[in-house]
Amino acid sequence: MATAMACWPLLKWRVRSLLMKLESDRRNGTDYVTNKFVGKTKEIFSGLPKPKDWNTFQNHDLPLLFTPDEVQRFAPVPK
Image (cartoon, rainbow, N blue to C red; front, side, top):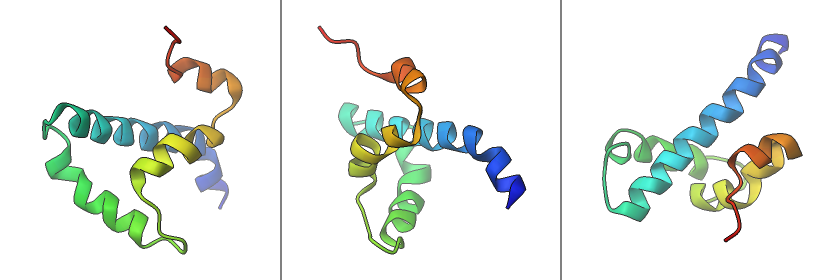
């Protein structure tokens, strides 16, 4: 348990990175990451106790795992 907690800061950034790459592929109609990871990602999210779409998780829940300072690093700049 202690090892998992020590790795948590790195893991949340990896999850964010993967989901951002999947979203980029979806938005741009490319498949750089999608072919390799989207099937497993959907399987993981559908196997949760309360199944959730990964895109919904990325947009609404993932930012809650970061501190306000961390969110500022990847928050979109208002136009």
